Amino acid sequence: MAYYSSKELVSRATEAAVLRDSTSVKSTLLLAFLAGAYIALGGLLALTVGGGMPGIAAENPGLQKFMMGALFPLGLILCVIAGADLFTGNTAYFIPPLVSGRISFLRLLRNWSLVYFGNFLGALFVAYFLAYKTGLLASAPWHDVALGLAKSKTSASFFATFVKGIGANWLVALAVWLAFAAQDVSGKILAVWFPVMAFVAMGFEHSVANMFFIPTAMLYGSDVSIGTFIFNNLIPATLGNIVGGSILTALIYTKVYGEKN
Image (tube, rainbow, N blue to C red; front, side, top):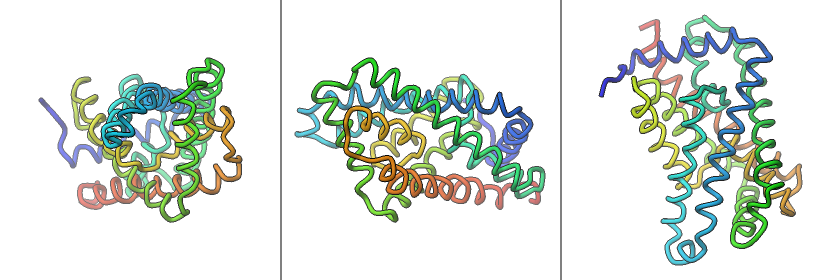
């Protein structure tokens, strides 16, 4: 199976970021909306199947976590193959051209802000129309799992969620990095599946996924407030995602294989 080298991946990430930087605001928001929706669809699939296994969850919780992890990668696969702008992926894409001077820090912030907002809209769209209005999670055990997940995600300390955010996007950024390496569709799918499955099964925190999971639970009656969602989960998870994607993945590889080398 043909693949690009580590040095070539830095160059490909650079070109991907330059292309995204030149995309209009309207197109960026539309592509970001799609990415948020795709990640939410992966989350909904994981909840529908993995959340419907109360017996397995009681007897073998690790297997249930694996099942949810095995199905969630649908979202990133759709982003990579069909094409969409995902905030967590862009935390990695934009570092190589920032280091080489091809993109300014303000342009990076512009893209991250637009994409983050668009991702949120897409995730909320799926949460409201496809997860809530359809009643897919209205009955047990799905209802209990959805509410329990939101409660768990908003009950950890700021630091714990931040560190889990680092872990999540270290793996997600590596997934899109590996997808760049593959030169065919099957290779890209395989490259995405393993890291994404791993971060979900290990219980790490992905900000865009949580834009779906927690609002969905709130729609179904969770006592998690908007403030609790934002300050206890979304902010620390997002900050951790930035560290995991931009520093642990992109910056290190850029320093080793970037244009200055």
